[in-house]
Image (cartoon, rainbow, N blue to C red; front, side):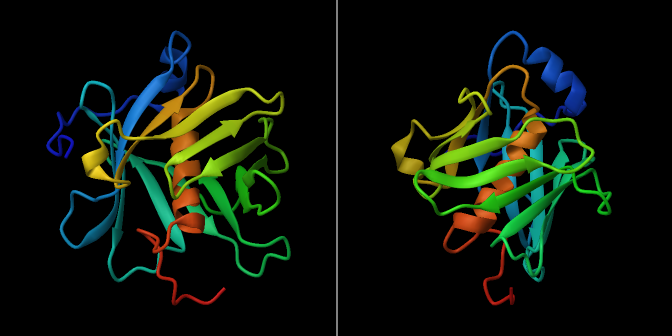
Length: 203
């Protein structure tokens, strides 16, 4: 089992993370467990074992809205399920805790190899992505519009931990918080049972 008492060093702002990532990929260890009592969620460490991101969802919450926070508890993104979508299951990504104008929409896609489409919302000058592979096996790749692999979910090299611990590798130039928000949406859409979501919630 990986280290669960990391050095509580505050994570840098999202922009700083992207700047540092220009030199080499960023590798995170993602643990499907909250460090808070009576919470579900994620605890995410950097390559040095420092806490980078976290998701804490109380057991009484249905998981239709999840906040991704940095190590200091500052909201990076809010991921919210879109109700009554005619395009199928869809999750909206908002910057911070602002939930009026989404910056990305992540839509489940069951055609061919594509699991999900990540599309920039109107007014957001950002690229769109496709996700292929299997989240259940913790083996999926995020491609940009030129079919370059920009992020990957990989199984943990330690097989004994199963699928509750895995790696997220993010290539230079891609926002690490956004990649982690995509992971949160994939958890909601493809994990059975979902770590965060109550499946008794009506669509």
